[in-house]
Amino acid sequence: MDQDVEAAGLMARPEIALARTVLLVDDDELVLAHLEQLVQAAGYEVHTAGDGHAALEFLAQHFTPIVITDLNMPALDGLALCRAIRQQVWPGYVYILVLTVHDGESAILAGLNAGADDYLSKRTSAAQLLARLHTAQRILGLEQALKLELEEKRRQSLTDALTGANNRRYFERQLQQDFKRTQRGGGPLSLLMLDIDHFKRINDRCGHAAGDAVLQELVRRIRHCLTRETDWCARIGGEEFVIVLADTPLAGAAQVAERIRLAIAAVPVVTGVGALAVTASIGVVEFHRAASRESVSVESLIAELDANMYLSKRNGRNRVTLPVPSTGARTGSRLQAAAAAPQPDRASLHTIVYVDDEPDIRLIVQTSLGLTEGLTVHAAESGEQALELARELQPDLLMLDVMMPGLDGPATLQRLRADPAITHIPVIFMTAKALPEDVQQLRAIGALAVIGKPFDPLQLSAQLLSLWQSSAAQPQRVGGSAGADHARLRDHVTRLSGKFLERTAAQAVTLGRLLESLQPGDATGVASMHEIAHKIHGAGSMLDFPAVSACAGEIERLSEHLLVAEPASGVASGRQIRERLQASIQRLAHAIDAAVAGHASK
Image (cartoon, rainbow, N blue to C red; front, side, top):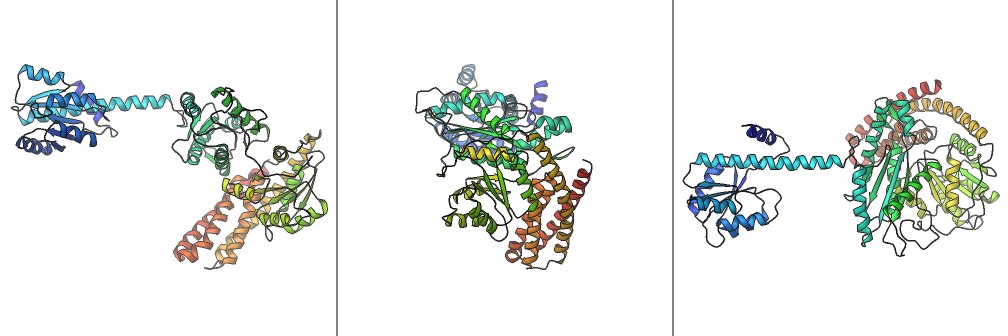
C-alpha cells in the first residue's frame, strides 16, 4: 500500500507523463482486435504488430513504454522479442508483459528469464489485465521519477543556486572538454572574464539583497547576448563570470564582449532599493590548436584571461581588454590582436581637437583630458569648425561626436580624408550608439577607435591614452597634480549637473507642449522632440543621471518610430506611439524631480 501511495504521488507530479501507450504483439488478428478494444476502452493509445520483427521495427520508429506480447509466434517469437528489446538502448524503460495460453511454470520462467517483467495467462479476466497495466504504469512512473530526481540533482550540483548560471564545478569540467576539442583540431575557443565594477560598494551601501538582484539581472542580460546553444556562462566567484564561446575567433569574441558590456551598462538594474547603474570590466582571450611546440594549458589561458580583465579594471573599468600582441612564436592563448589599418608614425600625443555640439560635454572632455601633462585640448562645436582648426593646428588627434547638426561626425571624417593637408590626422569617435555593428561601421570608414558614451570623466584620460598606446603611440605621463585636477574636475561636473537639471526641467515641459500640439504628419515637430530628447539622453549619461537619460532615450526612440509609423501603418499605430510618448515624458519629469532632490542633498 505504501508503494502504491508513493507511486500515485510521483505520477501526480505534472512533469511526469504517465505511460499511456501500449504495443500489442500477436499473430492472431482476432486476439489483437479483442485486446485492442479492451485496452483502448481503458484509455490507452494502442498500436499493434503481427510478429516480433514488426514489433521491433515499430519500436525503432515510435518508442512505446509498454509491450504486451504473445510467446508463440512464427519467425521471431515472444522470447526472442524480449531478448532483442533488452539488448537495445531506448529513450526509457520498456515494460514487457507476456500474455500466453501456456501458463505452465516452465513457460513462465522462460518468459521472465528472457527479460519479461510480468506474465499473464490468456484465460485470466480483463480486470486482471487492466490491473497489470496499472502496475506497469506505477513502475514506469517510479522509473521516470527517479530519472528526473537524478537529473535535477545533477543539474543542481552544476548550477549556481542564486543566479541559475553554471557554477565553478561545471566550468572546470566543461572547459576541459572544450579545450581538448580545440586541441584535437576544432575551431578557435574564446573566453571572456567579466567582473562587476564596484560590486562591494553595492553590497555595502544598498545591502546584499540588492547585490543579489544585480547578479541575477546580470546573468539574464548575458544570456540574452549569447545567441548560440554552444555558448555558455559560469559564475566562478562572487561577482566574477566566465563566458565560453566555442568555434569563435578573437574578432567575434570582441563583438560579443562589447555587446555584453553595453547590455549591462545601458539600463540601470531595478532592485528593492531603487535602480542601480551597473557596469562591468571584461577581459578576452582566444585559443586555437598551437602551431608551435610550446605547451598551452587551461591554467595558462585562465591566467591570461584574468590579467586582461584586471587591465580593464586598471584602465578605468566598464571596458573590454583584448590580448596584447605577442613577440614570440606562440600561437596558442596569447594571440596577435586584430590587425589595424596602417597608421602614420606618431611619436607622442600632444594636441587634440575635440568636436561636440553640446557645450557642457565639451567642457567636461576638455577638463578631463587636461589631467594629462603636456596634452592640449582645443574644442569645436561643429564639423566645419573642426576642419578649420585641424588645418590651422595640425593636431595629433581629432575626437568627433557622431551625431551633430549640419556636418556630422562621419561626414567630417570624409571631408578630412579628402583634404591632403589634414588627411593624415587620426580620428576617434565618441558616441552613445556604440553597438558592435555601429563600431564596425565607424572603423570601416577610417576611425582609429570608438569611445562609448556614457564615459567616466575621471577615467577618460586613461582610456584615451590606452587606445593611443595600443595603436603604436608613446605613453603619456599623468602629472603630479592629478589630485587637485581631479578635485577641480569634480567641481566642474557638480556645477554642470545643476545647470543640466535646470535646462532639462524646462526641456521636459517643452516636450510635453510639442506633443500636445503635434498634428499627424508634422515631421518638423517630431524632429524637434527627437533632437531635444537626444541631447538629454547624451548629457544625462555623461553627468551620471541614468534614470533621466533612460527616459530621454525612450522618447528619442519613440519619436523615431513616430516618423515611420504614421505614414506606414496609419493613424492607429501613430496614436499608440503618442500615448507611449506621453507616458515617457511624464516619467522623465518624475526622474528629473528625483534627480534634483538627490543633487540638492549632496
